[in-house]
Image (cartoon, rainbow, N blue to C red; front, top):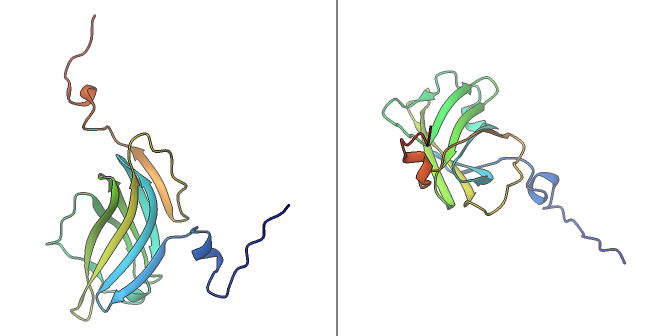
Length: 152
């Protein structure tokens, strides 16, 4: 017995398979980037194209906006590609915001949304455009905060 799933015109490979990072413009100055599922205490690189900043050569990060868990590492105004480092630091839904200033004096908020799996919940399949950079030490582990070097 075989099971077949019909795909409608609304279902395409990107949405149905959840294979790529999804970029949605929610308002004139709010763009939500759906990163997918991440694992807690891990650092990821997220690459995506944001059409709103394409061909705006004066787009730059806002110096007043500092986010420890989400850091802009590259911005290509020619292609609209944005590269960000995201640290998954809390379980369930995590939202991190980066503010960009555009050439027209307007600002754009890039809101990165991710589901974060807790410790022992498995390993997520990363979307295209998301790359694991490193596993970070768990601050709740007793060995992490200890300065004890062991028996010698």
